[in-house]
Length: 151
Image 1 (cartoon, helix red, strand yellow):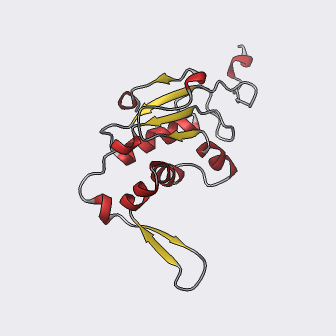
Image 2: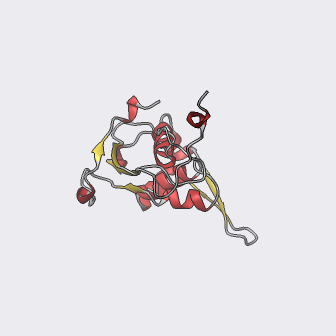
Image 3: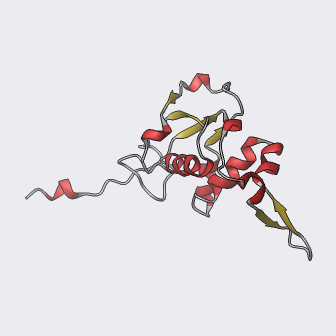
């Protein structure tokens, strides 16, 4: 029996195949979209996924201003932050984050779905969020994918 065929192949920085993909957020639910984006950033859709290596794709999110939250979550959902000082607890809503820029809302949601370590911080840097359809990554020749076809 050939036991060499049973070797586990572990990806590293040299063997990883990183691609550029475009995701259209028009009419998509925020949480469901960000869960799939987090899996793309992590590389979980690839057969050579390795947990401790950045083997995910670079993701460009366009039309981020057209993302949807069901119900009254734009104003009722509350995110908390604490400054470290007495009385320094700050509340903010998705609507207030969206006013400051779409990138802030998407970073807040996707960051919670990535590992809480240096790798997670590096993976978050591979996400680019734009309000309209224009982006500055044409030189990378990104391919557009249908986010609804991913599981």
